[in-house]
Amino acid sequence: MSSEYTRYLGIDYGSVRIGLALSDPLKIIANGFTTIQNDDRCLEKILTIIKEQNVEKIIIGKPLNLKGEMGTKAEEVLQFIKKLQEITSLEIHQIDERFTSVMAQASILAMGTPKKKRQQNKGKVDEVASAILLQGFLDTVKR
Image (cartoon, rainbow, N blue to C red; front, side):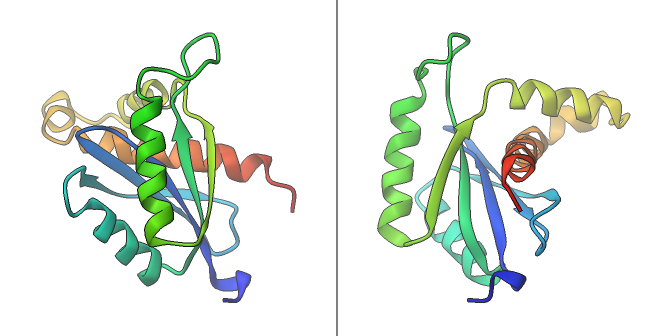
């Protein structure tokens, strides 16, 4: 797999929805990709995206509380990571996801998205949050 044509996948895990983002092939810019339902088929859908988008690394948000300690969602995310590791050998990085949903909501508001549309598409927040956490990772990686 040539790193020139691969991407990173950002995951904002939620018990109802999972936001997904992809890097560009140069691994400079993160873009929201989609939101999927957290159901029995979510791992299958993620594996399909990994293959179709030539993903080489997964970045997933680590739920920390305001003190920087593992939050109440931590065990759920760790179980999800274990399931991911069972279906793929890709490297999985966990990064602090504090405030990504708040930043995502602020970004969506700043774009002027009407309230009715925001309420109809709650998954957009998850998608944007995954892009924010992936972009944070990309910004810290040495080139």
